Length: 115
Length: 116
Image (tube, rainbow over all chains, first blue to last red; front, side, top):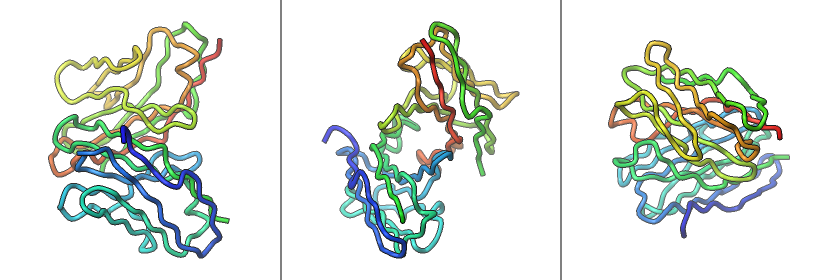
């Protein structure tokens, strides 16, 4: 596709359920990022994948959060045993890591609401 | 660890007037600095960046930003605001080291409202 694609665009779930959020980056982009945007707050870094290197997981808020990237392309962010404080918009971005420094291409996000 | 501060939650400006959105940063060593914009119900879009060289950086849609090392600031400016500039603006920083990749630290965002 032409841009970063995220699904679902909206997800409502009950507290304690697991959710999976998907990101399909721009073709050829080797770097992929997940950020979280909470109401009234800025963007919080979650995790960063670069090629075949070990991901930078330093932003994951708890062990309930995990992410994987299969085949260097599509990524899935999984939140286990969701809590109400997990409610946020989860943004995925991709980029070329060594050129166009800092120019991340963002998807439109997945809005998660935990009841 | 790096950080970004955007001291104003909202900026109101009349159409045609100058627009300034403030940003200060903290980072070890030299910074890469960025501005992104988020229009309603849209993803974030890159506006401009400072890497090195001229302190005044020009970007998309007539926006510019000035890097001030002594004040650790990177304020976003537009000489004449348009109603269509109403959006959420984010400043971001990355340390100038290869290991950081493109991992950006964002500020809390400033909502700009341009009134006709």
